[in-house]
Length: 134
Image 1 (spheres, rainbow, N blue to C red):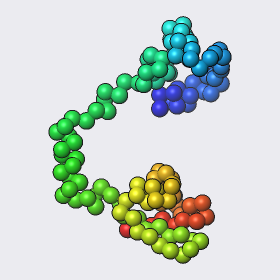
Image 2 (cartoon, helix red, strand yellow):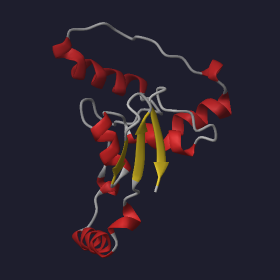
Image 3 (tube, rainbow, N blue to C red):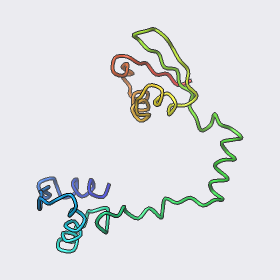
Image 4 (tube, rainbow, N blue to C red):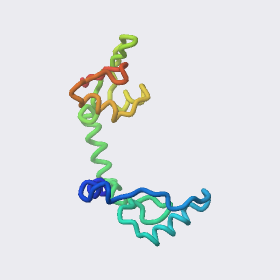
């Protein structure tokens, strides 16, 4: 999001994307580290070559995990949204206990199903599936 805000604030013409160097696959981390030190990129997510960004803020305590589990056991319907999927090619409607399960069964990203449901047009997904929250 930081780079998106910068692009909007400063304009796309003030940014560029370029290949700095071609190298062998075995050398990529060494070369990336070299350019990190040389250029000190402001918008780079990672601070060290080959290491993911710091995700310590995403860790959840055991106490929080226990609370989430307890809430799911008390009211699983509050977390999962049941969904009916109608296949327009076969005319068969199937009910799934969650959008994630429907996505897995149909090999569709759950975010695509959510976006389709939220859209005002409610067009069939890929001209095949119609989704309906229950």
